[in-house]
Length: 240
Image 1 (cartoon, rainbow, N blue to C red):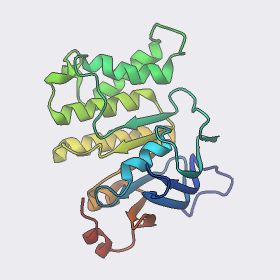
Image 2 (cartoon, one colour):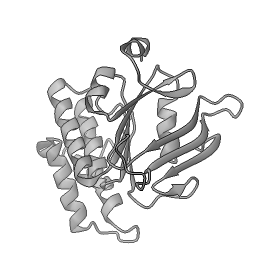
Image 3 (cartoon, one colour):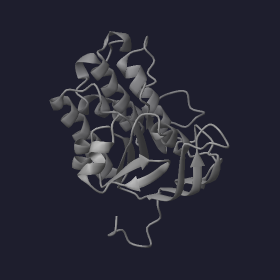
């Protein structure tokens, strides 16, 4: 984003980073990548090129093969402060036998409760209630996850992350399985949260047209590199 003042520090910074699972065969090499407060960055590319691996590496769930990964001014392997980063994995990571409320409170507690305090704070409860409401799940609050549709479960995962009040959100295909109307509601609520809190988001998104409609920047992983989206021809080449 060219209009960001030089005094603003990136919330994510990757320098000379290689990611993957084999030392001699990295999936992606990233000479330089910076994400700033308030910025939404979408990333696209064919299946298997390293999109999810990139999110997991930035989130600290996977060690980079080489290079420096800095998030919220902490360089890996330093741990982030509790609740600073919210992660919506593609498989959601919900507790299926537990209720919507319980799952969302897990996020709220991460962002609003000290690790040594076993009782939820009033702030955590209010954040959970608000997130459930903006996701349109009030009637499902006490419903176990296993009884919800795939789209409803995806909304619960998003509510859990918003209730956490993170500085940055990592979202892996978080709009999939949603009908058009619900997708717009989830996206609107997420962007509204980000704008109010000057939070950032890195989102894996297979729909190029949709990504262009909400992202400040669209990046494409191609041939082991992260490149800016340039033309509609690129979109035709990106098949997920």
